Image (cartoon, rainbow, N blue to C red):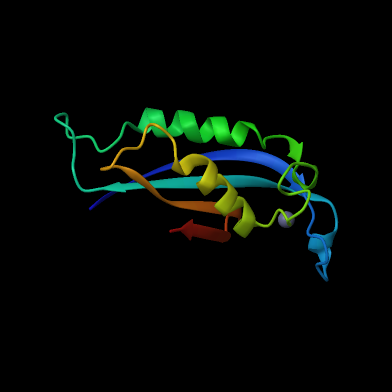
Length: 123
Ligand SMILES: [Zn+2]
């Protein structure tokens, strides 16, 4: 199986409701998001899915979050904007994208809230 990975970034503020510690205070992150696409068959050019298409669609999803206050945006006005919830939200938004077909599917989204801390969501 081939696994293709693309990384993009966005900046946004959040806080964690009910958290006992500094994360309960308003603060920001330079979030990095990695999308993984997996499949077995390459096209006639030897490509699983075009990097450029995956980057474009990932950027479009992250653009909706960039330079914003996550706690005010649905669904994060109701659920905490943790890296875990962000990873699933981005995965669900991206999963049904038309750039994917039966062969090439989104297999995971990893959200890095710092260079040393990440969450990977997959089916
Ligand atoms: Zn945080």
